[in-house]
Structure formats: C-alpha cells, structure tokens
Amino acid sequence: MAISKASGGLERVGNEANKMSHKVLKLIHTSAMRVSLPDEMFELTRLTTGLLSAALDAFSRQDLAAASVVIKSDKSIYKEVESLIHQLVCKMIDSPHSISICVELITLTKSHELIMEHAKHIAELVFYVVEGADVHHAPTTQIEPLVE
Image 1 (cartoon, helix red, strand yellow):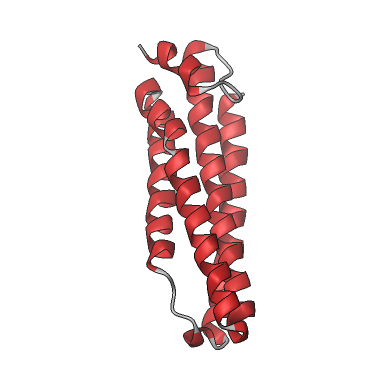
Image 2: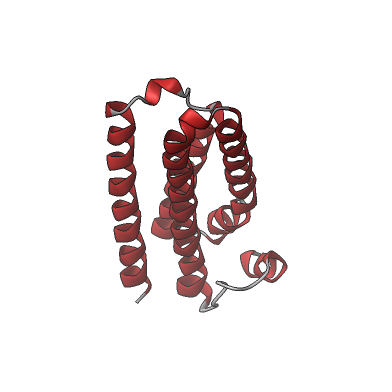
C-alpha cells in the first residue's frame, strides 16, 4: 500500500515537473531577459531536489532517521519560498512591466513547494511501513521517539 502511495506521489511530482518545464520554456521564449532570476530560485531548486532525493533514499532504505530529517527540513524550504515570493512581489511593485514574468516565477516557486510536500509525504510513508504509525499530521515532537 505504501509503495502504491509513493508511486502516486512520484507521478504527481513528475506532472509538476512537466508543468514547470513548460513554464520555463515559455519564459525563455518570451522576454524573460527583462527580469533576472533571483539567486533564491536556484537555491530553492537545489533544496527541493535534495529533499526529494533524500525522501526517496529514506524510502528505499526504510531509514527512519533520514525520513525524519526530510520531514523536519520543510520549514527551511517554506522560509525560502516565502522570501522568494516576497522578493518577486516587490519586483512587480517596482517595475510593473515585469508583472507577467514575476507571476510565472511565483507559479514556479509554488511548484517547488508542491514537490516538497510530495517528498515529505514519501518520507512519512517510511514511518508507516517501518513502525505502522501515521505521522502525516503529527507534530515533530511525536516523531522523535519513533526514530530511536
């Protein structure tokens, strides 16, 4: 059952990545050069792919400690997403000609957030398989004792 749920999550990640690639191509073909990409977008991409990789690794090894790290690290990505969206909104206010491009970049940022959510769900499935515990809505304080 957990493998089926993880497979579904990976399918949604693939769909989101496909949507992101179309948006990036659209940005390349339009006048995206008017707005330089914030460095935070590259950092967010690195964090998201790292988190997905760590979640898949934890799932394949059934490693509770690694899964716990994935679940806890979502806060850093949320902060990065929040910061990037704030930056893009400020850029739209400062230069209204860049609104359409910034909206596309905000959509890409939210896509990263969705992929992070799927990665976190895959990590939560490790706890379900190994411990039989549903930690989807559990606070991290309840997850810690399961790791030990």
